Image (cartoon, rainbow, N blue to C red):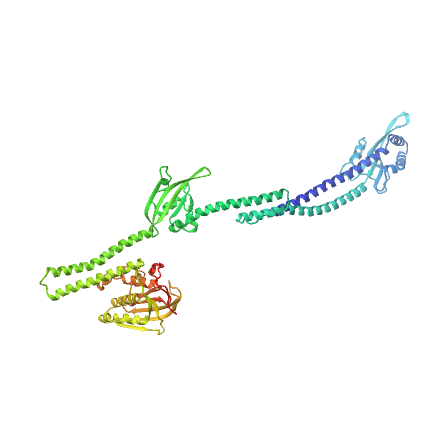
Length: 627
């Protein structure tokens, strides 16, 4: 904008100079014309006095009047100003040349003055744009002839000037004017640029300052170079910037307080104006509703449709509406409690109102309640099964005192087995409870991972022999270092995994256990580090692909009937996984149905034993392996 203003100032001054010089030039050139024409007419009037006219009239009455008129005019040629540019003519009444001082032509152009003279009127009117200056004088004399007959003779004295002298002088004046115009334009350009810079430079500074203000930068103060109106404007601008900064700081502070409170609310909040258009939505609500950045502004009607609420905008905007609540609304796998009500505030003594919706995510509570119910139901079912067996066997023994000893022994053995099964269930439940509540005691120490593996294999050798399994342990890396971990819990994990391999491998199968030490950098969910890795591989029945993601869920069993037959509760792998996770490791299972299963147990060389298991609490049990 300042550039356009500078151009305007330059153009105004240039046009001013041009206009002034044009007016001055026009006046000067017009005065030159007036000067020459008035001087010409005045000179003619001074020459053709009444006495001169009387003398010319007498000469007209003579016989050789043309010659006498010529001689008189020639005698007064000095007073008439006759020269190379001015000539006189003696014309008859029709305008034909009788005598002339011109040596170049014997004809004369019929001008307005000459035509007036032909019509009998003296004329000396000078017209702008005419080729000549001329003067026409009509003469008339009475002639006496025989028999006293009187006749009249007329002629025209015509003076013509080509205006060459006037044109030369006018051109000289015009040249002077043009030179003055060029000089004036140069001076005007220099002055206008200086003036425009003096005016636009402060305006440019103010413009830059305004741009910085618009971008939020209030740090720069504009320099004041003068005490004129622009200086006053600059000082006022600086004062305005300071006041604006102070006001914005106050407004920003209040807004940040509200936005911080609004943003960090655990509940989602969505506000609508009285027409249902969105006013505000916090980040919690955006996440709960899974809205994209382009759809943050969701109207009330779309909000109701999105959540499939059993109400409508008409009901909410009705005069009698106050508030309404919806419990456990299912939305994209989440359970949400929603409360909708009216709000009214007052700003600048003007009332404002609208609708506000508060969304409370109860998914965790809902899932917790659901898990608790399922847990109680599952535990009740798991305990009821052995209790039913114990009750049935005991009742059979009591009701039949004469029962054969071998049958009695069978029933009593059933009671013992079911009691052991209940003991295992209670023990596993107690373990899970301690893991969940961070109350499991840990006893980390240094031990040989290969020796632990061999002890577990030896312990389970008899059980494997009952199924004619080949149970082989090997250490593929003799440099496996001492491991700092809870040896008893690690052994529990190994025993659980090996027992699963024994249970779910058909008789006569092959089970291989190995341990090695590796640096792992491509295991999902594990940091890059050195790990002691146990591998338990069997050629058993395998696990269906769709069941592998749930294999560590509590009470989850791939084949419930077969698990019941083998005495499984679905808690073993869940407990094993939480123990390994508490050590900072991970269990990875690879399996193919009817082709066998391979279990990888990763335990980091350097770690902090964590009692929270996979939930990631911060209860530190002990430290890191010695170098």
